Length: 468
Ligand SMILES: Cc1cc2nc3c(=O)[nH]c(=O)nc-3n(C[C@H](O)[C@H](O)[C@H](O)COP(=O)(O)OP(=O)(O)OC[C@H]3O[C@@H](n4cnc5c(N)ncnc54)[C@H](O)[C@@H]3O)c2cc1C
Image 1 (tube, rainbow, N blue to C red):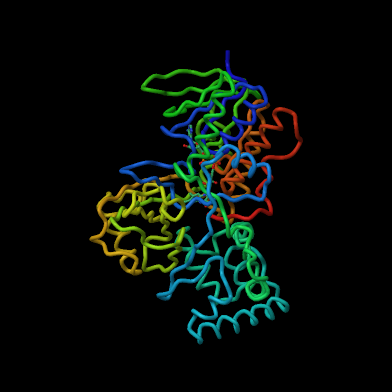
Image 2 (tube, protein in one colour):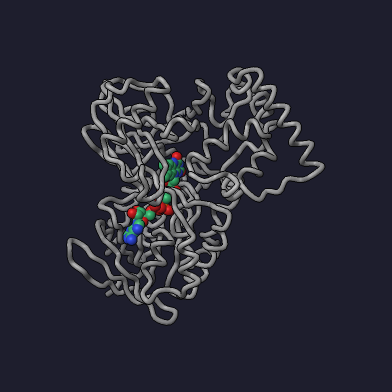
């Protein structure tokens, strides 16, 4: 007997959908390609270290998601005060931008130019409105040229690997919380004492096990809820369909091929992967749209040191082009228990494209590159690094270029022909969301399938704030 719902991917979206459906009395079967659950929000244990795929700070404005995660983590939770900064011009600047810090840290001439540019662009925008037609214009219009280059343009071009004129304004509008410089100044100057500057200045994190504990707890509850399955190490080869129904999923597991009959299929795998899996293949125009969609990859270089700590920051952005690493994070600042006493582990992230030069670099070369960048900014000496681990993540960021919307729509619209199929999550919908968004998508989709709500799981991201 097939399960009521077969779910591709055991990241947070798939796990949350599975959990909601299982609690609602349905049987679910999750098929995960990797040997672990949690997807991008998984954690790993090695040599006494616990680490995540870069910094993962959980926060949400969705009370139900918040309560659910708190309940699942139980005692294994503690609250953290966020510290994240940007390193540039040889100094650290608070992030999100803080007017006091900008005023005291920027050289006076640069500060003067920032304000002149800011007021110039405000006036110019009144006479000739600047369209919000790309990331560059969106920021320029609100911050002016100097702050754009200093805090946004350089970093974004480095992380995305394409000019900011080719990046959609969606990315900025969804992610930048402080909309203009005056807002930044007002929030800094007129904030009552002892009130957090933003809602996300505090966050909770598991005391033990890293952020991946959240996904693991969902998986445990799914298995405890009945005749359900969470299978890892499953390679999905094809998804067979006929007319308006999905029929089965062909997989390889432990070297054996099998076909799984499907009642209803939920996909949380990248939309590009999903389009490739359909057998027969979708029409050529859909395949063309699929080929236009790209995900940015990240190579994570984890550096182990015999030192208590390197910094107090949860993470630090490195926007300057002469450094290859674009962000670092230190897990001990998330939980003391992420590293043994007297030792620490730092993650250095380098964005790249799948299969490019950086992606194919060997461990020694990557370690040398990352440690070299950290030495350049004065955080450590290369010869302090006692061990390193590498992790390559192909589907890290859906790339919001200028045409992504129409191509995502073409793929998702074609998938809507199936009466027993839904796509959701960051990858399945090609939406640049956070952990809580994926959890909320799974929750709402599950409740919709249980007929408890008419809410749309694919509109959750609109007007929400992003962090990663
Ligand atoms: C570097 C980085 C830092 C981040 N920091 C934060 C943060 O601070 N706060 C925050 O809230 N969010 C953060 N995020 C975002 C967060 O990790 C994701 O939004 C969330 O984990 C996505 O969950 P998902 O289930 O939608 O997708 P995924 O986690 O990508 O899950 C998809 C799953 O599908 C599986 N899969 C893929 N192909 C197949 C296949 N063919 N067959 C079967 N399974 C398959 C994958 O292995 C994966 O497990 C960060 C992301 C990154 C990359």
